[in-house]
Each structure stands twice: as C-alpha cells, then as structure tokens.
Amino acid sequence: MLTCIKLYKDKKVRGLSFVHIAYFTAWGYWNIHYYPHLGQWVSFAGGLGVVLVNTLWLAMLIWYIRKERNDKNSIS
View (cartoon, rainbow, N blue to C red):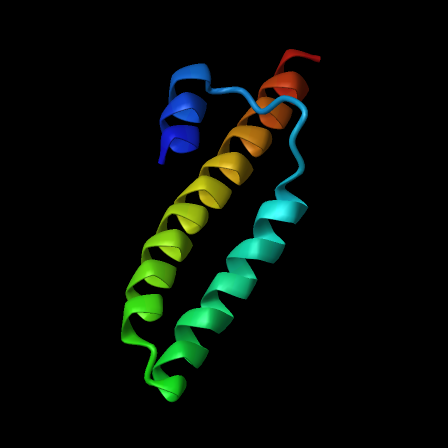
C-alpha cells in the first residue's frame, strides 16, 4: 500500500517494469482461486489483500506510464 501512496504522490514511474508486478499479480489471482480448494481460508484472506493492492499498483503503473508517453507525444 505504501508503494501506491508513493506512486500517487510522485505521479512518475522510474526504474520499474510493470511486467514483474503483472507476473506476481497473476500469481496472486491463481492463489485466490487455488486456496479455497485446499481449505486454506486464512491464506485466501491474506492473498486477497495482496492481490488487491498489487492490482491497484499495476493499474497505477500502467496509467502513469501511458500518461507520460501521451504527454511527451503531445509536446512534440
């Protein structure tokens, strides 16, 4: 959650690739699908929290990357 707050304040993405966050977010979605089948409800709850924050962070990364690219193209 702190990374989301920091990104919101900075409104810039530097030195970070969204591919890595996308991979771990997808893995998190797999976990929240898989944990209930194992009866691991506490892990499911924790995984749900992680996947929600990762999804928010990924969406913010993509938003600010696209915004910066659009701003550069409009200036040129």
